[in-house]
Length: 400
Image (cartoon, rainbow, N blue to C red):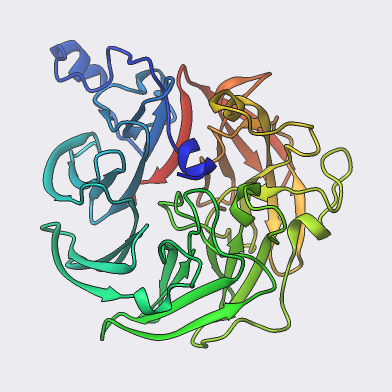
């Protein structure tokens, strides 16, 4: 898939703890602590998914499951839903009392299909999106397919597939980006969002806007490229991560309940954002999917400034280049602030989480601090390394 679809993937060398079913009583006693997050880690080119505590990062990998090179993870209804994209399956895993990963309780097989997005309506209904010409409807308890919404009539003439990607449900409507893939790497040149009535399973409208390229992503299993703040849905385009020269990246927004993009709002990030000692206006740059908003309305992400650092994608090793800077983003005021944490690699540019007190956790892989977790305090504008990890950390998914 595209660069980030590849970069959602990990690690060749297995480590013995991963996927191991054997453990001693002593190990069981040691592991008797509450895990607060689901996470994905890399040790080379294979991905492992499990649960973790920031107080026990030395246990990362124990009782984790191996999911090949590409995968997504979502928490819902006291379960983890893990999409193994190499195999083409989505499995529902139970969690123990301490949130250790349990057993597979249900599984949906979709051989040869890239499906990395789950939009939950309730405990017995969800939609699946990905490199498809439809939205698949499932019962998440049983992982059985119950229907579909055909999107093929909305396919652009040059597109290979409609590709419903990032999505969010607000007031009984699913707003989902149609990526209109013209190749595995490049998406469409126009922003499109399908608006679905989740009670009737019908398309209400498709909002279109050619001010920026396709919004959303196919590697955004947390659906964080769309952000709901103050009655607006902000939709982000990364312009195919630079694989489609000439595309325009940035944000548009839709007012909740409406079916068109706000004509008065557009934020062309590469064109408009310049930050001293970080990036120049006009240089291509892109944001990773952002956090859910904090109480003060900010979101947090990584800003990839590889052009400013004179880096390019050449091969898989390029994804280890430290080009991604943790940032704070004000979507309404169109401002980005660099944070006091080093440049992370593209492999580790997904993990970020806003805590209840407003502090922000970042999972990084930096040259100076290695694989680590930082806590950023926006009140003091300071960051502190709170844990280290042997493996490359990726998603941080709160188990609540």
